[in-house]
Image (cartoon, rainbow, N blue to C red):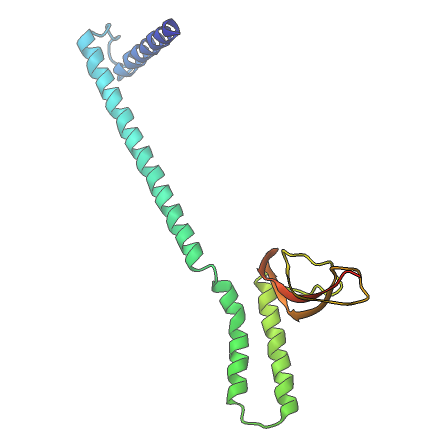
Amino acid sequence: MTQDNNQEKTQEINELEKSVEQTAVADATQEPAAPLTPEEKIIALEAQIQEHQDQFLRAKAEVENARRRSMEEVAKAHKFAIEGFAENLLPVLDSLNAALTDSGSDSAKMKEGIELTLKQLISALEKGRVIEINPIGEKFDPHRHQAIAMVPHEQEANTVVTVLQKGYLIADRVLRPALVTVSQPK
């Protein structure tokens, strides 16, 4: 294994020497280059080392800048992730403010306004990928439902009978489980 490494290093040195000799010939108009003395080879190799070190430092700086930029972008994404959702909620806020400033006493119009505002809120939640869990008639799922009580019922055991509080999913992840009553085994 050591012999293989030595052979590889010897081959690399030979290739470097050829490269140095080729780069030492600056112009085609110059006289043919004489073989380089050891001192000239050292100087040429040191110049090549310096060039490679400069290239390495520039590449390293470029990678560091890219990493820093990506970290800043991630931080901004976390900071402003809610921005789109908040924009969807603003019309709901406007509707609620308008309802509070309305001095009319017509309860039918007030109810209609509340229903429209609720529709706006549901639409804003759906745009934010928040989906309602309505499990009536489904099998009880402890990951999506929270049973409050078991009641005697005609349905199969462990089936959701009533929903006391709706649950919600956000992108297929439970945001809040539904509070339910479940049928007892017979």
